[in-house]
Amino acid sequence: MGCAAARPPEVDESTLYTDESGIRHCSHQYVRDYFDHSDTDKSGSVDANELINILISLGTQIDDETSKNIAATIIVADDNENGTLDFQEFSQFLYSFLNAKSNDLKSILFFICDGDQSGRIDASELVQVLEKLGSKTELNKAEQLIEMFSDRLDGTIDYKGFIKLMIKLDVK
Ligand SMILES: [Ca+2]
Ligand SMILES: [Ca+2]
Image: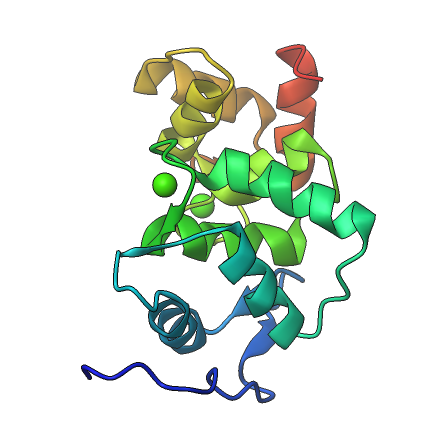
């Protein structure tokens, strides 16, 4: 510790992987290493330029479309709205970037708010989605909404159920 590494952490086959539900992940260790590497002033957060360097190192081609998607995802991921991403925000940013549909707000919200990166949204995660959409919702109301659209009885919805719920709530 103490001196920042000159080179970014190595990307290998364990860095990026897809789980059995088809959800893509970036290994926790890589996210941690890269966050520490990028945060050269040790401010505890990374900005848009640092994020773009990370994505390039993960093999992303940065064209206009990708830049727009990055900007949209940063806005949704930036919980405390200070323009930079702390470690938790950064981790959700990468997860969303790997999985969400480009420039699709509903899709970005799903992955940004899937805090345990389970590929499913539970009631407390749904409260966050609705908060980002500007509506304060009680947990028990969120539980009822989940129940209406869930394909399981475990208090969670998958992406399909989530989209149905968003349509029902008239989210564009
Ligand atoms: Ca922030
Ligand atoms: Ca979840």
